[in-house]
Length: 189
Image 1 (spheres, rainbow, N blue to C red):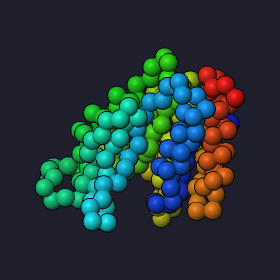
Image 2 (cartoon, one colour):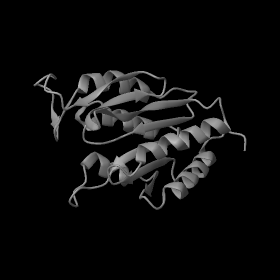
Image 3 (cartoon, rainbow, N blue to C red):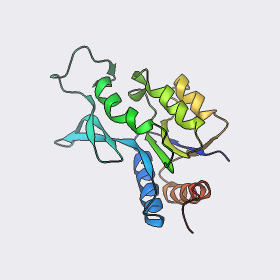
């Protein structure tokens, strides 16, 4: 089993929630755990999703994508959303710098919006080349077609895939937690 743990599953199944719960459990086991990375969060208005923001694990937040018409017309589209690539890069890329004392990287997610950044995937690959374990989320292939960079991660020799569905969320959380413990030497059982 490799040190890259990839959570995949259909949209809305709870991939991000699972990753954050595993992280909470790991930090409870070891409050001194040094974690780097980011997650994405929906922005809702009146019950409707109007965009996404990137949240760094050191607490900074910035825009990722918006369906609002007031956004720049030059930003690329993913579905109905305009993606603020520059904002994403300014928040996410510093979190993917390999530092000597990092115990774990969280990358939520490696998907279409994030991959619009030409610097993002090379940063992800640099993290994978380090000795630091990675917990990341990836989308499932749509209509049998995978995003090439996601396929490359899925087929990486260090990757272990956890396919999430509504019935296995609790079991997947336990499995991920215990697998990660094996790769985190600073945690005392």
